[in-house]
Amino acid sequence: MRVIARLQDTEFPYKEATHTRQVVRGIVYDDDFRIALIRVQLTDDFFGERDLYETPGGGKNPDETLLEGFKREIKEEVGAELDNIIELGRVIDFYNKIGRRNDNHYYVGHITSLGEKHMEAYELEWGLHPEFLTIDEAIYAYEHFRNTPVNNLVKQRELPVLRLAKKKLEKIRSNLNK
Image (tube, rainbow, N blue to C red):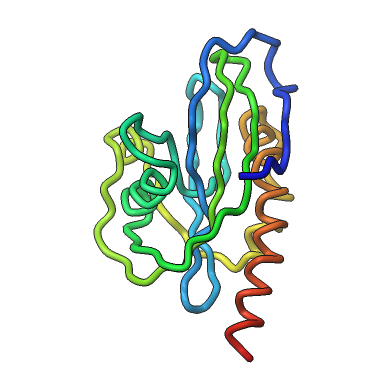
């Protein structure tokens, strides 16, 4: 999968990365071309205040392929089954605060059905939930995140992905209208 971006953490003091997390994330869209994003609003935690959206996804388990991990994460967080999955690209970024390198693998997929979500206990405790926005609404939201360290890290990672996904979604929609 091609690398879209390699990003440094400029929000927290430098700390050598001690481990790498393989992450699978995606731009998943419904029949109306609205995309699912995970709403995160936390007043304070280890990273500080958060008020943002993130693309659905998370860590890949050691016993699964990237694609299997992606499908599992989308089922857990959005409750969605997918088809027409395509690779979008990778973003490599760092979280200095925890000494972690993230190798984010992004996909685009079409939602065929929505069912029960299976979020982790901490995700439920934090009140994380999916919301559907158009790609333009999503880009606007990311461009206008409040200026907090973790908001800035997520924005840096995901805004280029959303802009690339917009082009892919426009091409998919155009092909459907032919």
